[in-house]
Image 1 (cartoon, helix red, strand yellow):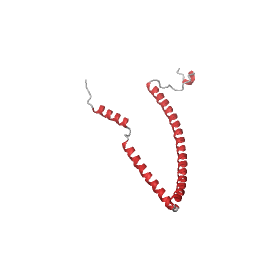
Image 2 (cartoon, one colour):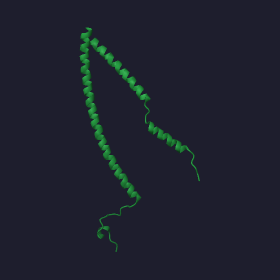
Image 3 (spheres, one colour):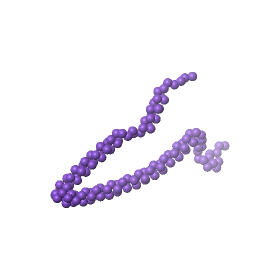
Image 4 (cartoon, one colour):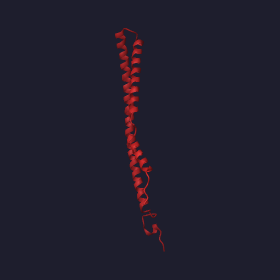
Length: 136
């Protein structure tokens, strides 16, 4: 008479698949767990970096505003002019500096080769795929 797995004392409720499929599934599952842990760790690091960048931006802007207010006062005293005249002078200087930085960024970004290694590998793959195959 056939005994069920619970009656025979076996701890396995069902027969587990054994073989290549099972090994591949376990391998992919382990890789998925590692990837998940690494993604969580990366997210924590990125979150901390973003928070610090926001704080640094606020501190930099505050310092820049205070520096500009002080320079307005210095220009007022040096040029013997109204506060709005020195404000326009400093504002114009800031706009010119921003334009110069925008052109510098544009020149820099136009000279960068984006993903050059990946593009080269794709070119090699395309050349390999388009070459004629040899038949024996």
